[in-house]
Length: 112
Length: 114
Image (cartoon, rainbow over all chains, first blue to last red):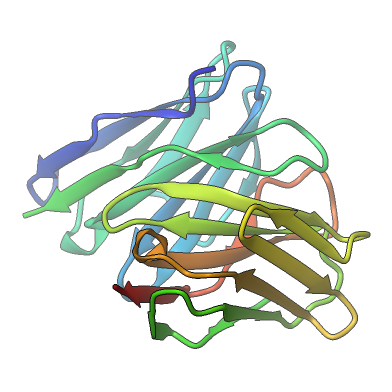
C-alpha cells in the first residue's frame, strides 16, 4: 500500500514569501503530524491534526499553520518566511491508539 | 517536560561488530517508544515500536529493549553491515493514546566500515 506522500520534495523561496506544503497520509490513517528538522534543533513537533481538528500544537510562532481535509490530507503553511525556516519538513501519519508513526520523505525548504 | 537523550552522538565500527545504541528519557510516563533510521537527506524509516507494557521487540538483526522505570531503551544491532550506516533516532510518545506528539532524541550517527 502507498506510504505517506509529501509534495513538493524541494522548494526554494525568498524571505517574506509564504509557502504551502502538502501531505497525503496512508489510507485509513486519520492522524497527521508535522515536524521541522534542522541541524541545530533536531526534530521538533509542529502540530497534529485528527479528523480535521488540530489536536496538539508545538511551540512555534503563529506564522506556522496547518489544516486537514475530510480525506485526511493535510497542508501546512508558513507565512512571511525567514532564513531560519530553512529545514526539512516531515509529515507522519498513524492509526489511533498504540500504533506507531509512518513518516514521509519530507520537503526540503530553502529560504534565500 | 520530557527530554530524550541519545548516547553516543556518533559511532564508527568495523563491519561485523555487534553494537548498542542508547536512548534515555526523563519522564517514565510514556505510552510507547519508537526507533527510526534516517539516511542523509531522507525521511524516517520505522525500525521497531515498543509499547510501554513490553520489555523488548525484535526484527531481524535488530533488538530493542525498554526499561520504563529507569527511563532507558537500547537498540542492539547484530553483525553490523556497511548498509546499516545511517542516523538512528529514538522517539517517545506521551502517556496518552490520543496525542500525535513524539519527542525525539538528537540521534546517533553510525558508520560501519567495510
